[in-house]
Image (cartoon, rainbow, N blue to C red):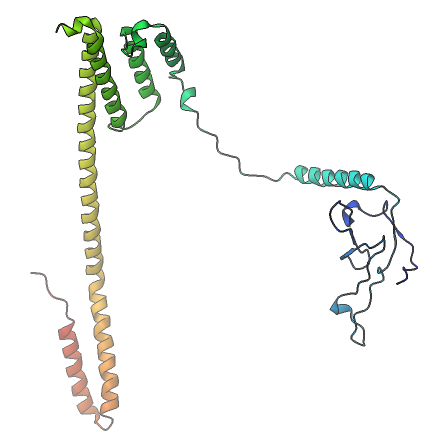
Length: 304
C-alpha cells in the first residue's frame, strides 16, 4: 500500500514517551489522530481503523487518517533514549515535589546491647580473662571469672525488665552450669579431693547454694502465678455464666409471652380452618379456653 500523502511525523517533534524504540520490543507509536498505539513497519504507521462509535452510514469502520503516515527519524536511537530519560526524571521530580504525605514509620526500639546497663564491656573482659587465665582454660572458673559472671547477670537483669518467675529457664541453666563447674573443679583440685574444699571450691559451693535458692524462689513464684491465673480464669467463667443467666432472666418473660402469642395465633388459624360454621359465642368460649391453656403452659415458674 502506498504511504499517506500527509507530511511525515518528525521524531524530534514527537514526545519521547509517545513512541517506543526500545531494543527487543516491537516499535510502536501513539497515533496523533486517534490516540491509540499501533506498530511501525518500515517507518510507516500500520493501517488501522477507528472504533465502532465512528462507523459511517454503511456500517464499515472508517480508516484513521493517521494510517500509513511516514515517520522521519531525524534523531538517533541514543538521542531519543536520552530525551526519554530526561522526561521520566522530570515527571519523577514533579511527583516528589507534590509532597505526598506518608505515615511516619515507627521508631525502632533501642537494642538491648545499646541500653544504659550494657554488658558488652564486662563480656569482653570475661573473654580476655578466660583466654589468659590458666585456671579458666581447664574449664574451672576462677574467683575473678565468677565475679564477672555475677556482674554480667546482674546488669542483664537490670537492663531487661521482666515479671517475677519469667527467668526460670535461664536460672535453671545457670544452676546446671554451676553444678558442672563445681564437679569439674572437685575432680581436678587436689585440695578438694581430701575432703576440705579450697577457696574456689567454697565460693562455687556458695554460688550454687545462692542459685539453687533463687531457682526455688522462682519456681514458687511461678506456681503462685499459675494458681492466680487459674483462679482468675475460674472467676471469669463463673462471671460469664452469671451474666448469661441474668440476661436470660431479663428476657425469659418476653420470650415466653412471644411463644404463647405464636401458639395462640397458630391455634386461632387452625380453628378458622376447621370450624368455619361456628357461631361467635362458641368461638369466643373456645378462644378463651385456648388462651388459658397457652398461658398455663408458658407461665414462668416462681422461684422457691
